[in-house]
Length: 183
Image (cartoon, rainbow, N blue to C red):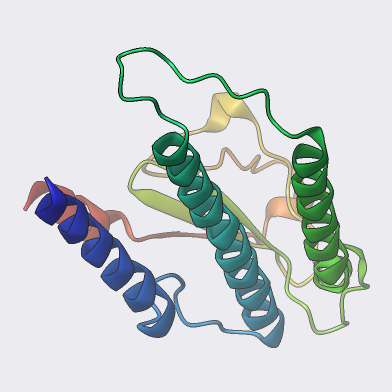
């Protein structure tokens, strides 16, 4: 049984180190903001993962330390100061992570778009992403559910709407993902 536990521990360590050092977690970032977002996400995973492992080690210690080998359950009243201490530490860590990511959130959601930014709309379906680019006017045309046709008009763009005349819809990844699924 001990060898199985050691194998699980080694496999977990290899996956964690490979995921962090081998860059298995995220695809390559295409913007500086994406890199900041990925770094913050990785920091959150590492910190919460550390506390998860710590909690399990403490739990294992308590189970092994306070067990009674006589077939009856051991009783331990607990320590309210220790409980509140751990709650306060976790609250401080969570607030620190939240405030640390505030600048990234602000840049992503609240910052003004540059004049050269291109607005796109992405609609996901199984095995396909429909990417819609607005025309030169920067406005998307109106879409209607009754006009949706998977082959000709996957987003149901209303041809009578002048804002949608120059919209470009580009379906992507369908063949590549479908071939991975089937073969």
